Image (cartoon, rainbow, N blue to C red; front, side):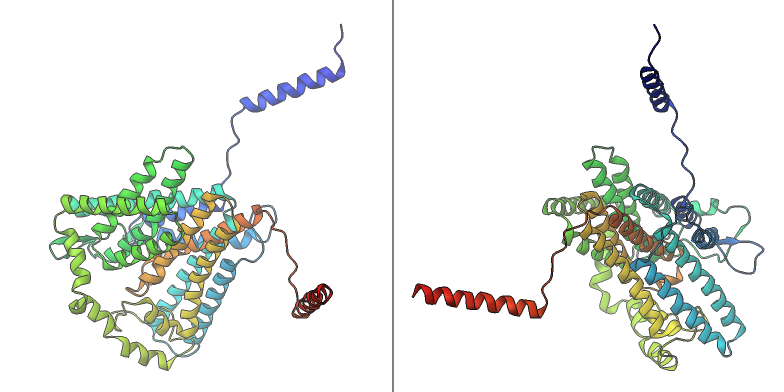
Length: 480
């Protein structure tokens, strides 16, 4: 008996469906998230003092990846088939304003005479600023979807835990793993030690340029690790790996023995406690107390050292050094009020060191430059909070709050040391700024439009009020 064409087509469709289910998944192509993740790995794992040999500029592997991201971002915008997001966002606009301000400062400073050493440093600073802004733009426009954004941010957490592990080895057994991370083709820019003494303890820098930078990075990455721990628990997924990363990062923060790290962590806690539910706040406080008790037992004297950092702040030499140079900064700022004297032109030992990024940016880039830097971080925080407002997904809302708290760290750290003079914390800051833009794009594209209500003009409101008033008067007269 011959089968009907309908049954033949049905069996063929069923066979195709079965073969589709049994076929291996198609490989995922490299995209913006892949490129940014390579940047994060090279930025954090390779020691910050390693640069390429044989080129006139001091460029790290992370700088090379960021410059590659700039060209990929630019060329991808000439097409509509490579998945690059189009259109304005607050973060993208802020990055363009930042770049415009920096280029204006560079043009103003190089228009006149500059000593050759300062001119070379200005050229180098401009290249690094373009590279960092490019990685922020690639993060904002090239990372599409929540899963790819999570991929990049999870890379940040894992590499942050790896850096903290390097710092823990330096602190606990004085084993410097960075000596074995010198890759072929790279050279050290300086022989500065990664381990510095403070009181009776070792201050460690891990793979970063300074212990302060290491501590601030730990404060910046710690809330991301906690976010993925909470998210995994809510989704009934293995969460131990993320809590292990959070524990390592918290240890790294303590081992940096940095006042800036504690202040940054306080800013993070303030933002998170404003948005977290009461139960999570209580859990966080209990975990923090247990952690501090454990540190007091495991490393006697470390908690007292942190206490003395703040208790003796009035007589601390490092704080007095940070505050005695205000007159010098004011004098230099008055000479070039709006556009500054040039990026990278104020450097030690030729000039006095400002352990304050706000002062340094004001002197080098003027009021226009410092305003652009602050506005860039503020736009990142605004984008994160805007995404939290638009979304109804608890995971997205928590990630938005977490990113906002992360971007508070550079704003605090910039007041305690020259933050943008250190490559690792600067690069991560631009990655997180771009992440808020990517999150806002993803949230807007999936948000359910809310019904729009008609807002009365002042004339319509007055007419409505008069009608209600006179209508109420007529009813009262009729009843009387």
